[in-house]
Amino acid sequence: MAKELAEKGMQVLMLEAGPPRIPDEDFSEHVWPYGLRFRGFGDQKSLLREQPVQRLCYACDEYSRQFFIKDDEHPYTFPEDKPFMWIRGRQVGGKTFCWARISYRYSDNELQAASRDGYGENWPIAYKDLEPWYDYVESYIGVSGSREGLPQLPDGNFLPPMRMTCGEEHARGVIQKQFGWRLIIDRTANLTVPHNGRPACHYCDQCQRGCHTASYFNSPSVTLPAAARTGRFTLVTDAVVSHVVMNDKGKAAGAGYIDRITREAREVRAKVVVLAAAALESTRILLNSRSRRFPEGVGASNDALGHYLMDHFTIEHGGGTLPGMTSSQRQPEGRPCGVIIPKYVNIAGGEADKRFLRGFYFFADSRQDLYGHAFRTPGFGNAFRAKVRGEIPWRFSITGQGECLPRHDNYVQLDEKRDAWGIPVLHIHASYGENERIMAERIRQRMGEIVDALKLENRKEPPAGLSPFGKNIHECGTARMGNDPKKSVVNRFNQVHDVKNLFVTDGSCFVTQGCYEPTLTIMAISARAGDYIAHEYKRGNL
Image (cartoon, rainbow, N blue to C red; front, side, top):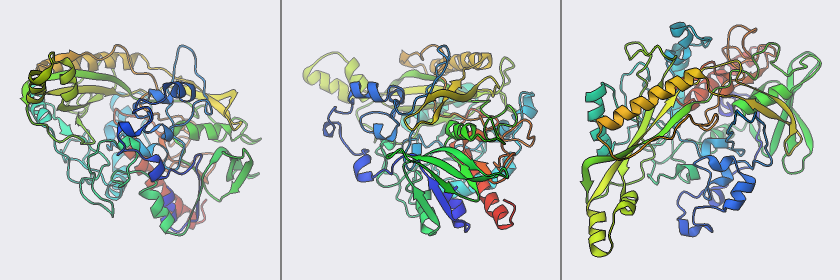
């Protein structure tokens, strides 16, 4: 958003709640375990004391805990029987330092789902509205992938795809023959060739620790420098925004924030205000922006604000070793992506399952299992070493990810508790429903069928139950988009219905979530909204 508005001639001030990150101090993708005090395992007492929630994320460890908040400074609440796992990063760049870089387009299977199955609401936009903005974003940030011609997972402007491993090539043939499904290389915002002045990925496979070469997309390396080059961009760090400042005419006049270091309260003024703080934080700011005209918060003139929270659920880590595949040579390690089986259930021409609405997809990978093989192999001495080095097996692991339905009773509201800066925190009330539980059983069944088809040995069964709400870090909804001001918070251009110069451009605007990762869609929506803001501002309509 900052890049788009600055490049289109507007003066942009960006408030960031956290500090900047310095690559030479904060990035650790090339640090070996022996270079760290706790050899990569981290100070467990410190992690438990300061980051009891954040440490549950796979990427929060001794290498990268600096990219995650301290939970004791950023509390939130939830009912005892509805735990919520809120993973957050407050710094210039947010979680784009340590995201998984998965970049999928939504199709009308996601955007117009209600027309197909009658549940909930359609988005007020269709794929044709977002397609040029997907093109635009992909061409700028660089997304590698293969063109497959699948309507349920639209192709993009891809850089050359990464290569599958031997184990994945084998699995692809078996899955295609047994199920008629296509197993494809993942689509990821890692560069496979030099692109827009950035070098190709060097396959160190430690992306969650930062990237000195900027070979994957993160905003401090890609979009914010573009904004700065215009000369019309100002960045204020350590600015913890508490509320939108409103004037007597019911328009947004700026933002109030607390200096993270000094705890001083400050205000900035603006003619247009954009919230892009991630789904729950943007909604928290809206709820806290109270005045006589908006006693329950800006955007709360109906009962949509704060409601319809969604997050994907996963059935994780099924798999085992592929029979008959051993090698004395190791393939190069480090590819920063896996493979996927796109959604095939409850789509036109696909498998229909009337027991649940919407659907799921699988992501997987197959790599040589040198260390697990060594630990499982009995013996010692030369014979042991020869067996370990000469018979390296291939492991195949698979996870299913399912869609969460938007439900009014999954919601957030302000709590009496306050954070370290005196701002009311969120109470999060969310859980998965019967639809998700039935879908999870089908995912588990399908995973078992895939494992059987591959005849995997040394099998690992996925844990029982669904992943905790919030664990997948794909929270969406709570300020949904729609044409009807009585049912939604923002319009089709992310403009708050009640305040024409206030916009919300993150995952909070999502009407449905689909089963695919939301990040590329958030960027496409933001670019589209930025174009609209610039044009409307020049015409004097804001």
